Amino acid sequence: NFNIFKTHSANLKVGNNNFTNSKLTLGNIYIVRDPREIVISYSKYTGKTIDETIDLLSSKGAILLPEKNLTLTLMSAWDIHYKSWQMLKVPTLLIKYENLLYNTKSEILKIAKFLSKILELNPNKFNNIINNIINSTHIDKFRKYENNFGFSEASKYSKFFGKAETASWKKKLSTQEILRIENIFKTTMIELNYL
Figure 1: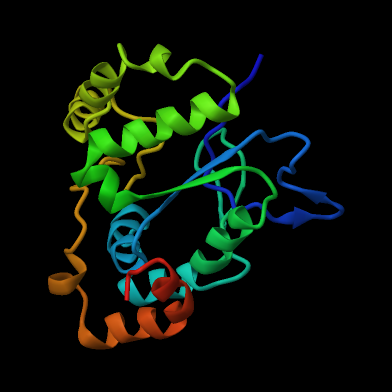
Figure 2: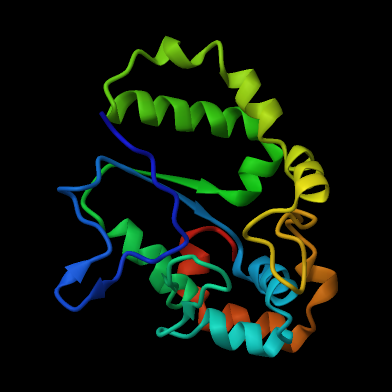
């Protein structure tokens, strides 16, 4: 038996305990997004200014406080968050958010292949459900659901499922804001081909 667990938390140590470890985790699928785009999206979500959001995204001690009956989330800085999961000694699949939006089928196939391998499942088991996964998880379906029924992770400032953009930062951020983000995260952004 296995469970698939979704989290926004970094894999940080609290006291003497890591968020998770290789004894508890068979594998890791990490979805990364351009921090310039995160700043815009998260600014809307939190109701904070762009500068406040950049401060938060670059804070090693950043946490997400639950608005409802949810668990505290250890965020840390964007680059530390990414590295914390890359350092976990388990098979890891890195998926770029941008690729998931624009090359959905190939990215879902990568995920299916990865899960087949780490869970020792027959990869053909996924063939019949790939198109269903793609259709049922399209961003428009999530938006429609949220419009009709609400969504528990929505904030008081915005709906949870936004525009799902990948290059809006070019128009929405000032030159100073772009340079600030790029200077803070330069090494990791280069590693991930965002620069």
